[in-house]
Amino acid sequence: MEFPEDLKYTEEHEWVLLEDGIVTVGITDFAQDSLGDVVFVELPEVGTMVEEGKAFGVVESVKAVSDVYAPVSGEVVEVNEDLPDTPELINTSPYEDGWMIKIRLTEPGQVDDLMDAEQYQAFVEKE
Image (cartoon, one colour):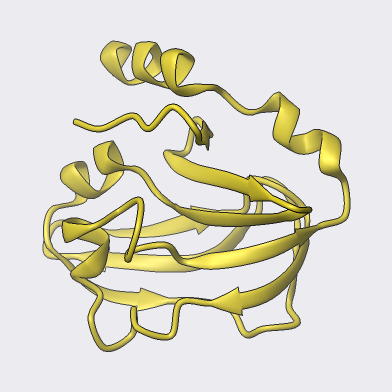
């Protein structure tokens, strides 16, 4: 199980990479492993406003259908166009090719409230 040190994490098992006021969001290695083989992904359109803690998309696997929650509030500025045709990227590369959306932050301080890699690893070990 991977826990990259340069990312922040949520209790809903999303990861966040902050770069110049834009956050890239995906689901963690732990989440994709728990879901099993991902077969469908639904993402919002560019320009959609998302709110911290609210669902922005859906990941469907052979085991379950799960909402994906926005770790921060802001505007969706990019979506991973590869995921609808190759949803298995979430399984094979959750932290690189399997990213889901990019959000322009409206409240930058929200990132500070997320867990670091060490905190997230301790969190999943309790699950």
